[in-house]
Image 1 (cartoon, rainbow over the protein chains, first blue to last red):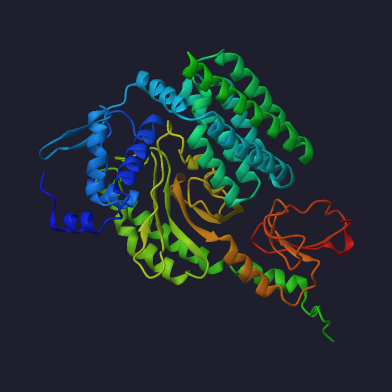
Image 2: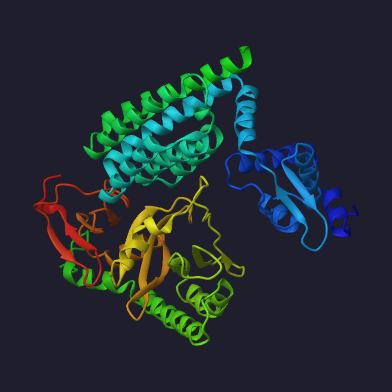
Length: 248
Length: 241
């Protein structure tokens, strides 16, 4: 494919860590497909639009798309109705989530988990002090959503929305942003259908109920302790899952 | 004689002035409603349903409002009742101003199966007008998945022959509203705070009660409602803190 003159200029003047940028593009789009943010058969935005959104040159984007094509995640059709289309199969989502967890290190998981203990504890404490009545009701609804959720995608969504709702009830833009990023980064790993996932699901629902009840009673100290305990349980599960996958 | 803290303003008078802060925004939202109704009636006359492209006709009105209220609002638009448009199950025609640049459309995730799904039907600023509230002022709240800012939402219903078509609204920078409110509270004592319907602080001159905090145990406090808004000034001198 011929690069347009402007693309060539971009390529010349793009930062030297182009390879890193290509990886970042691949990683972002893979993550979006894994999370179901871009569904099977869905067309990706035009290259100029997508590259602008990702903050990369169209050359970098095309290299990223080529990698995704090789992995079978994206299919490019030519012609008037052409473009890049997502090819995601439900079974391959669990496989990719497993692959991501296996590729992380125990120290990295511990580190991310430590951050989540800090964020979950702080947001729960502040939510107990600051949540409005409607926010408390919404947090309760999120607990029920997780209780009835089945499968990685639905459980991840319900779990993530609970934590993000608590962070928003804390009235903090920054804590909400960090919580949202954490949920996108590790939230789905927890719900792999391995190591008695139904027992873990019940435990997590119970812990969410306790956090929600402490927030409702405006018991900031209890909310913080229970959220920290819950987040520490998440680290244990992630490391267990990681060891299970890597040690077979 | 005014004290050091300037206790020379009557709280009831200040409450009335604070209520006027949003008059201009509400007037603009009303203009959007009128334009939207014209589009809807026009579509009905031609025997067809509204489409997303019809809403382009709102742009000049919305851009004018962004310009007019740039000191207070970050975005404005209409949020459509699910099922109304022929070509989208849910839709927001929402535009944000960007300093020194043309307005940009706010694009939100409206896919119910995705992590970032922005279900506006669950949001109080949408639900309240759909239940018949004629002027809704909601917040401050963290608008996650939406503007991702600390926000106040101001909305009015769009109705046509008793059916609810959606809302016309604007989102306000919480920080800018606070600054504007605090200017009007300058002559009041430090114990007087502006709160919303949940007794959440909108503006105060006390470092212990900043915007976003909940004021509790307001039993003994004197309250001065802001006419037409769910806000009031409360004088905490009489309450047990």
